[in-house]
Length: 438
Ligand code: NAD
Ligand code: UDX
Image 1: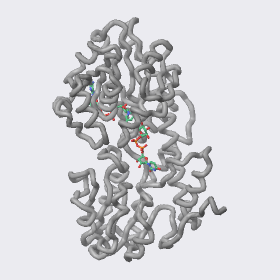
Image 2: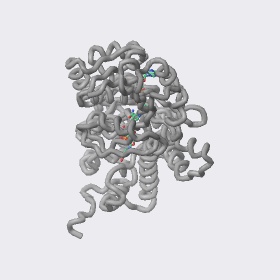
Image 3: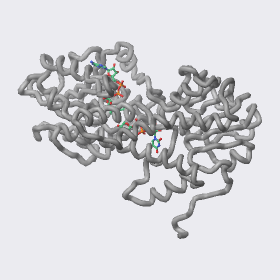
Image 4: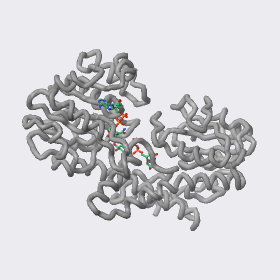
């Protein structure tokens, strides 16, 4: 078992640290945020991430996981140091590597002989090779090991990943990093470092492209009288297309897709490669929040000024409390800019967000509202008491941007229901074609 240092105790760093401790390694996890380190010392993880708090508590109790303020100890005591620091959008959309560079400079003096520095932060192709000079230690290797976890599934994705990708110009160092994941059963791919870095961007951008495609397709369905649910059901049956990432929505968001699409476009521009697909992927997503606002405007009668709207869901997707780059908040800002009054309910959000006054239940946001807008696909929204909600509202109008609600029940309760890529008014009782009967 190895001694591992993890730098950065955010979503990725904390998951990495806790999961490596679960796999039997000894881990020191460092962060520069004093309050965060103090909270982690009490096993308070400060985020909704199923299973993670338990793993942190378990690792801490077993003496295999410690949290420290400042990076010195985590750098000095480890055979492998994982960099899990932020790489936000910087100038011209490129990834800002300030934190990665700072840690590598610190590592230069601090790490043990033969230490392997592993870049888990998402960094542009070519970074790992380029930054080896910053460390300037011939005995120390810098290796790329991108992370593919999804928020809300972080622990499962780390302990049972679909692949472990490690990139290095020296295969021996890469193989030693792969060996740390023994016990996960994941297939490993060892590549050059630029290829490993690109696998990460290529995957996220491909998924974003799929979603922009399906969001445009939903718009087309509305114009030609097709149903996006039926269309994607037909597509999902083709295993070359795959069955996931085909649900239309208010746009893709979160801490990764928006910044990673822009960063890959910036990499392509630097490399003088024209990448119109990626530009269109980003542009289509920028259009989506405006499209949702236009649907809401039309559903409530043509203007939003003074209209009371209740938003159901504020996080960027269900299963997380993360509000970073949430499409729900992008829609909220546009609605507020046109003069709508907004309340919101989200099972994972307790504080007001921007123009949205956050209330404690879906019933509370429905009371006297002129319309409801479903923005996050929390399953509990499909189970609401529709007749009661309709009775409590000033006007029973609902825009479902996740196509989550049970159409028949909602319409029967008297709602005017508008959804993405489906006929309005909805046809209760309509089901998709059953492939087994064809
Ligand atoms: P985060 O903001 O949740 O956490 C980053 C942590 O690093 C913070 O706690 C911050 O205080 C700390 N930090 C910043 N500078 C530091 C320094 N110099 N030394 C020590 N600690 C420092 O970020 P995250 O979501 O965990 O993302 C980290 C990286 O992983 C990014 O490159 C991101 O693109 C990538 N990534 C994120 C996800 C995700 O779903 N969040 C998934 C895959 C990859
Ligand atoms: C993503 C990648 O999936 C993960 O591999 C990477 O490590 C980090 O970025 P995450 O940000 O947690 O993970 O979110 P994800 O589940 O991929 O969803 C991204 C966005 O796409 C969300 O806004 C979500 O609502 C949206 N989405 C997803 C849809 O609108 N429709 C879908 O069918 C799937």
